[in-house]
Length: 247
Image (tube, rainbow, N blue to C red; front, side, top):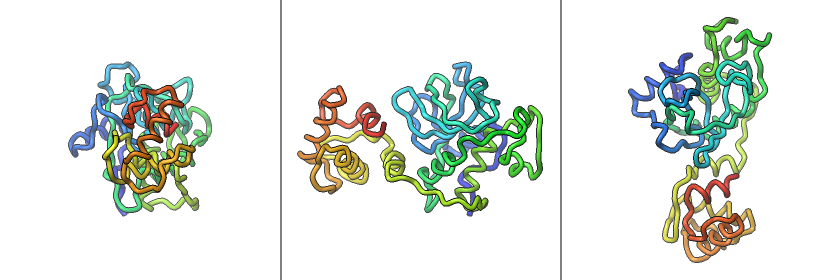
C-alpha cells in the first residue's frame, strides 16, 4: 500500500510537493488533526525549518507530535515529543488525502506511541527513523530527522513497516479527528452532529437519542454546556465550543 505522502527528508521539499499537489493550506487557514505542520520559528511564515503532526488546534494554539525536538532546541533536539506551538510559528499545513484504513486517527495513534524515543547517543542524529530512511545508521548535522520521523509514521500507516504493535485509537481520538471544528447549529445534520451528540451525552448534557439531527434537545444541551464553560450561550458550535468539548 502506498504512503499518503512522499518519502522526503527535507521540510522544504515536502512543502513544495504539497503546494504542487494542492495539499498545502496557508497558515491563515485552520489546521485539522492529522495535518502536517511546517514551522518557521522566526515568525515570518516563510522558511520551512521543521515539521510535525498536528494533534489538535484551538484558536491560535496547536498541540503537535514532533521528531527531533526538545525544550531547548525546537528543530534539532533529538527526541520525539508532544509540543505546544502557535499559529505565529506556522508556514502552512499539509493535508493528507485519507483513504481506507489510512486515517488521521490511526496516524496520531502511531505517532503518540513513539513519544519518548531519543537519539543514541544524544546529539548524533542516530535514530531508528533515519536508519529506516537511509537504509543505514547515519550521524551529523545534515541528517536532522523531523521529516524522516513523519515519513516513518506514514510508512507504518501504509503497512510498509511492521513494528509488531497494535495501534488502537480511542473513541475520543476518532471524534476529534472526524469533527474538524465544523460549525454546527440548529438544523445541521450529519456525522459531525452525531459526534457532537455523543460528546455531549458523554459529558452529562443530554441530547436524547443520537440521531445526527441538531434539534431542540441538542440545542438545549449545547447552551447548557456553553453556560457551564463560560461561553456565549448562542447554541452555535464553533471553534470555541469545540475547543472546550475536545479539551
